[in-house]
Length: 202
Length: 132
Length: 289
Image (cartoon, rainbow over all chains, first blue to last red):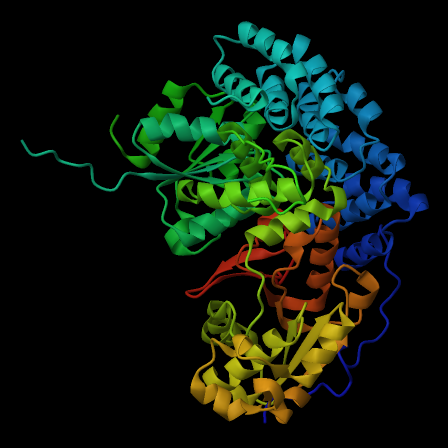
């Protein structure tokens, strides 16, 4: 019979101990292993954040983010926030994904991000309201769209409101519709969000 | 009088993590006679493209798990029957550097959000070879 | 229909746009989507979950769902997917293994080399035994290589049952009469015991796919079946599991997920590969940016 039980059990035979992994190694495999080994360690957060900003290999970046997510505290969140300003779109997207996975002690961070001078940062930050309590998310997102000049930032906020918004959002959405009647997509998005929130058939 | 039905409509894959944006593309393009399928990021887009025939992919740049440029590069490296699929990139960015990166990744055309319905339909017609 | 004591039925009314909101959420989180014709199917299951959680309205239920209170997402996904285990389940992936994947795996390997295949979670053993059976019945080169099959699960009772290898008729429903006769013998209560040689050829171990320490003991797999478990995890756990599985695979090794699952909701670590019988995922041979 060709099927055999590995007689050394499940582990591969003949593995020798590699050099200790390091976050600043020139070898991606070593950085990957180092990042993975630091998961959930609060004292490693600053080191992981620094590594995140300079990492160019996608899978190592993923491992760093997973470890930061598993630490799960406000310090991790603060360590990731600067990545929202990166020129690298992939790093920005990865940072938002990681922030989304962190507990909703993000409320103070979010209020700050919604006042950021960069529209990109405000836009990305709308995603963070998605996992919050509906009343908090609604309040923060409505606060954002009230005076937001950038249609794409409003569109992002409206997307999240369509999922989590309460009836409290309706007046702000209607005011937004008035400001953007001539802008493509926004009237459509606002009417969809209003319909979802009201529970009325479109 | 005999009604002549249109032959197979052009099939367009719309890739955007925003559900409202996907609905907007769907309602606009279906009215213009296109068949639309959605995907939420670059990985799902690859799965759809590898499973069913499409005439065009519309892809957002900023998506979770796999962004639009990474997806495009993977598409262009992919099997011959999909690697040449026309790709319309849609982005919030209007910078020349973003347009250049789109071209380098293999985009055929680039539009800046929010896209007007008329503009969307016109470009989709051009890229799929369907007359308006 | 009211299964609560006394009281009139309090069926909660759900509007179309509420169903849309729910479907968008489900699609985003799990990848599950439904055609227009499945509306009744969705409504029924949504009503069941609203009632089961004692939610007074769709809104209340939706808030609960978004917060994943009491693992509601797991219950919800369970109600939308078929979870039965049996031999030759999702056999298109087994066909893909012998028609396509093994060619890439054996590549330049000399005869007598080892091929390592992992079924995790293996539950009560149907999956690893199916892999073994399928290889023997369908792979012309099965005698040319040493094939190691490992079956792992977090549930030690399931592992014990797997090692015993006794199954009822239902588990065998996809197997031909010929295969049942050749590889099983009847035992008490109308059950069937799988051949001793097959029982001995699978290594059953306890492992938790999310636990990096557990998973660190497993390396150099050519093919992993990780079906119908990742869909239940939250984002952080899915990422962790994906990274663990990556390390357990050889570069170029393959991983198969369950039919309702997709790496699009899990991790960008793997490449998407299309074969005639299935879409599977591959650990890249080398890094790219």
